[in-house]
Image: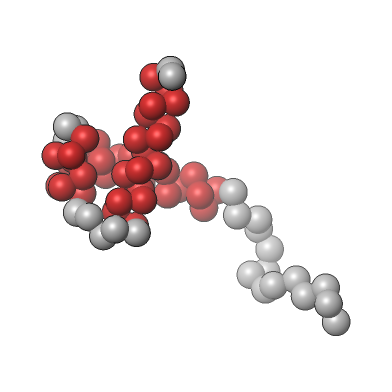
Length: 66
């Protein structure tokens, strides 16, 4: 595996641990051997990526089964 693939996997795991497992950023940093600030940077970037793929619109569901 390339370094980029490993970093992508690590980043996804960081977000999963924080969001789903409720692990603190300090604990995640110790687990991966990186700083708490780096965990915060990765988490912020990865969660912003998710919001970027949302479609724009009026916020209402499109109900096509009327």
